[in-house]
Structures are given as structure tokens and as C-alpha cells.
Amino acid sequence: MCLSIPSKVVEIDEDNMATVDTMGVKRKVTLDLIAEKVEIGDYVLIHVGFAMNKISKEEAQLSLDAYAEIAEAMRSGEIDDEEGNANYA
Amino acid sequence: MPEIDLIEGFRDPLHMKALAEIIKKECVSKINIMEVCGGHTHTIMKFGLSQILPDLIDFVHGPGCPVCIMPKERIDHAIALASMPNTILATLGDMIRVPGSKTSLQKLRADGKDIRSLYSPLDVLKIAKENPEKNVVFFAIGFETTTPMSAVLIQSVIEQKLTNVYFHINHVTVPEAVDAIMSSGDAKIDAFLGPSHVSVITGYKIYEPLAQKYGTPIVVAGFEPTDVMESVLRIVRQINDKKAFVDNEYARAVSREGNVKAQDLVNTYMEKRTHFRWRGIGDIPNSALKLKDEFASLDAEIVFKEVLPTIELDDHKMCICGDILKGKAKPFDCKVFGKACTPTNPMGSCMVSSEGACSAYFKYGKLSQKGGML
Ligand code: SF4
Image 1 (tube, chains in turn green, orange):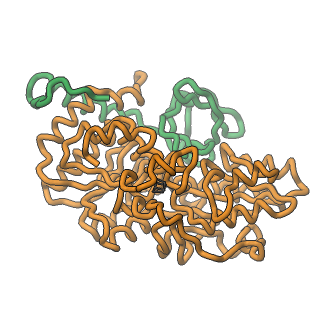
Image 2 (cartoon, rainbow over the protein chains, first blue to last red):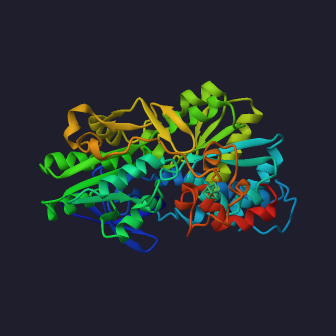
Image 3 (cartoon, protein in one colour):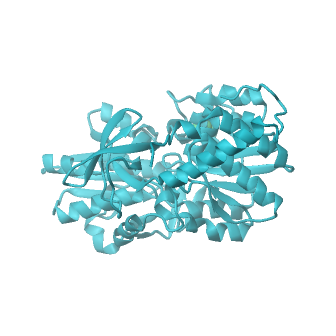
């Protein structure tokens, strides 16, 4: 039941319904459960026809930056790669 | 702010590999991690995370699949309600496929009963208006994630003065279930991955008493593979430091307080039940919600009391779903897994629901068997 993929708000109409794009699939969701203002271009998590929250792009960027940093540390040999070429799905 | 990739960045194999290497380096003792939510079970199986992670890390699957924990007698309620004359029964997800004591909603629908599987609870409004001469019963299921959506529907039914909609509420709550599993002492669990979407609604504060009571780290994790990997790393570090607190890896979506508007809506219409029987686990105090007394006229359990069976029913004796939900067994431990019990012909609810552990193992299982970790 949990659709875990972030969806981008592409349209908002008068009765607080939004059209969201989830990896190319468009659907209508209600924004009734969100207290703060939602704008076009925001990302939301959706569940059974409702947007549940806004996703913080700043926080997401912090995580991605941290991953990039450790990946770089691995590349430069700071973290050993014991198995070399293991296959990661 | 420039466009940011919220999907692929969290599935980058290089990131996963780098995280795995750090975990391998830092993890020095065996850690059993329960992922409470069925969504995490799927991420772990789909991306083969057990293979990437060191053998010291073992994932134990938890009770977080709303369809899996529904006891047969509640499904029999749905069946009894759907069998009433002039009635439309509406529900969500895989619920209609789960067998009750004699039949399933799906079979009943094939026999001509009007049973609808909805995209959103709000679809009930349209159905009720189009069928004013019929009773529409919404069989509400789900954890804290889904409860606010039922509350919005209740609010709309009242505001729009619809008189033909009733609610059979089966909303359950995570902390009480985790508490029941831990206090039984049966499952050996050292740490938890906290659910993603439950936490979006409730905030991560709901797990703080559990981390304290049982001395187990709880890290709220997103659903993407790097989210799970990073959360495992955070668990390893807490354990190495002999700490046990609630940490939030999923900060892009979860706060400590959660969605307060959603919580307020739930509290307006619903209150705790003193008891709820979970399939395979048994009775757990305060682990579910019901409509408040002032809304009794909307409560299908009260309005249609005389048609609802009261006998408590357990699963087929071969089915070990109960032990799986309690973290005591894994799907491969079940003798009929993949043989007599498959997704097309499920014997137990863990195989019916796409969020169930047996279904995840069936779908992605070969990967994990190869790793020899199970
Ligand atoms: S494989 Fe089927 S019978 Fe066995 S525990 Fe899972 S759901 Fe139950």
C-alpha cells in the first residue's frame, strides 16, 4: 500500500487537488493532509490518493553529498574494497 | 535550487558499495535487525542487501504489513458485511484476496456481491452518492500511515451529510506491536529499522519509549537501498558506542513531531481500543483504534452487530506466519513455502499481501538463498 517513490507536483487546482508525476505516471492526489503551502515543483510522498508530506530537497541533497563523499573516499583508497569486483545489484 | 534526483541517487550502486565497505569495517559483532515495515523487507530482498552486507548483519522481518496481521475473524466480518442485502463493501489493497474462515472477498465478488477495491478512501464518497439506496461499508485497514486518510473520509461523510456510509475500523499501531514482540522475549532483536511512512505521519518521537525500555537502537529509514544501508551503518555505530536512541536517517521526509494536522484529524474521530487480536501474534492491548462513541451511528461494528461473527479463528496449522511476524522464523522455515503456498494460491496472509515477507521471499528469494545468510 505504501508507494514509496517521490512524486513531483505538476499542477494544483482550486479544490486543493494536485496532479503529481511519479516516474512518468500521472495521478491526482488531495493536498488536504498537508498544513504548509505546496507549490508546483515540490516533491511529495503519496499514499492512497493523498499527499502525506513535502520532501525536503535540502535534506536529500545532504544525504547525496555524504554518499558522494564516502564513494570518493573509497575510490581514493581510504576505505579498502576487500572484494574488488563484487557484483552489486 | 537545481533539480535533484530523489530516486536514482538513492539507488546508486557505487554509493551502496561504499556504505557496505564501511559497514564491513566497523561491524564487529552479530546484529539482528528487525525491519518493522513490509516495505523495507521488499527493499532488502529486491536489492539483495543481505548479500552486500557482512554476514554479521541479519535482517529479521517484523509485523508491519497491515493485510498480514488481520485476523481471520475480522475478514469474516468483512465477508458478513458484504453479504448483507443492498450493501457495497469497499476496501484497499490486497485485502480482498485474503482468505477468511470459509471464503475471501474476491470469491464473494465473483459470486456477484458488490465489493470494491479502491485507489483512495475518498472514492467512497462518489460510490455513496451514486448509490443512495444502498449501504456503503468502508472496511478500513492500515497502520498509522493510512489512519488519517480514513479520518478525512469520516469528516467528509459528516460534512456532506451522507447517511448511507459506515465504517469498520481496523487501524493498528506500530509501537504497541513492537512492544508486544520485545516483551515476549522470544525474538532476539538488537536494533530496529523504523518504518518510513508511519513515521512521516507520527513523527519519530513515538519510538523513543521503546528504545529506552529495551535498550535497542531504532533508526527511522527511508525505502531506498542506500537509506537502508546508511541506517544499518548508524545502527552499527550506536551498538559499537553502546548507545540506544532513536535516530532519523529519513530526514528528507520525517521529523520528530510528524504531520500534526493528520494526527489531530485522527484524534478527532478515533480512540484506542483496549484490545486487538493480531493474526498469528495474538491479543495486544491498546494496539488498534476504533471510532469514538459519539460517532457510533457510523460504526459498522455497532450498527450491524447482529450479523458479525464473534468466534476467534487461527491460521492453518502448517502456516507459520505468526512466528514470521514475531521475528522468530523466516519464510524458508515454512514447510509449504513455495510448494502448497504460493502467491497465486496463498495459504497464509504473509503470502497474500505484496507487503508480506513470504511474498517478498517468493518474488526475490533466489538471490538471498545464494548468499546463504538465511
Ligand atoms: S509460506 Fe504460506 S503457509 Fe508458510 S508461513 Fe508463509 S504464508 Fe504461511
